[in-house]
Amino acid sequence: MALILIGINHTTATVALREKVAFPPEVVQRALAELCQIDSINEAVIVSTCNRTELYLGCESDQRQSEKVIDWLARFHGLERQELDTSSYAFEDAEVVRHLMKVSCGLDSMVLGEPQILGQIKSAFAVSKEFDAVGPALGRVFQDSFSIAKQVRTQTAIGQNPVSVAYAAVTLSERIFSNLASLNVLLIGAGKTIELVVTHLYDRGVRNIVVANRTLDNALDMAGKFGGHGVLLSDIPERLVEADIVVSSTNSQLPLLGKGTVESALRKRKHKPMLLVDLAVPRDIEAEVGEIPDAYLYSIDDIAEVIEDGVKSREEAAAEAKKIIEEGVREHLKQQRALNAVATLRAFRENADSIRESELQRALKSLEKGEAPEAVVSALARGLTNKLIHAPSVQMKKASAEGRDEFLLLIRELYELESESD
Image (cartoon, rainbow, N blue to C red; front, side, top):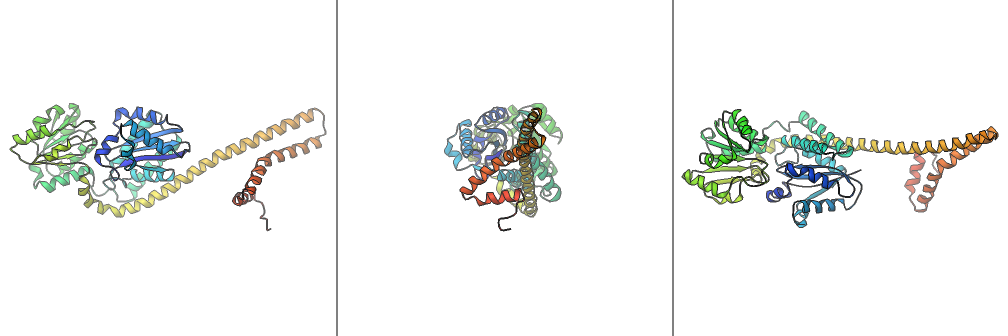
């Protein structure tokens, strides 16, 4: 079973392209089913986050498999193939294992060492298992990656400094406003990213918090943890007038906040500045909002510059993590080779058992006919020898004729034969 990976991420594609290639939860089952219908693909896991879309696949060996998958990805999202050619990457076998371990440990994230990606990968893996799209090949790769990620978190300081997209959003707020505690904050969404944002804001003294969400109960639950107010998405225009900071992170496939709504709110605020941070992919806030005077819009790609400062403190830990990952890759490949050997050994033994049984039955029939036992045993031994060495003999002659001396040396090692010079 071969492993392949097709993906795009924050280093190869803009947020505009990443949002086009994202897989919202409601289409994942259909996408997995279509992937597994492509010739020779047996297993699939789709990892789709704000910073990456990656397709992990287990398949029979096929040199054109990557090309077929990129074609499918373009068709599925209604894109021109050329849009993906310059922005996608493809890995095979050991490189797939190495890449997944790096991603799981947060070493391939926009925020070096950020912990959220591991949970997202575990969720993607669980979804594929739920839809019977995971088999033994991808199952071992993902489980080993989870183990390595845990080891990295335990043995290195990769996660000790509070650096995350959420943390960076709050740091950005501190650079623009001198006193966060006096500001009004509107948070759109009620997922883990928003919870991290509001936690950091609360730690800095922010108390005027409003959480808007599609489901009111979720908004109330999130806001209640921090003494804030929960509202519906439909209440955003009214609440926007009071908001000094807006941070949005939802799974919406369409923008929730448009240019006209923000312009109207700023007029009512008498053009008091407003910071808007869009952490969603696809984006929650129309890009045109950035054209409005007094509206300071930052997308998730803009956050990268803010993150760089915090990343420096994690670089030493990242070097340690890479060593752990390399050992993890070696161990995974070692175990995989051992499993491959087991299958070959099983087939080898079954073939020998089949030959033995065939010759034994022939010998028993000869004894039943009254043939001399010595002659029967001699014929049995001769028959076993001839049939056991027939296929290897044919292949050795073929290898010798083709000049493949390494094959003959391997046979000598395999059967512990003396070298020709002895």
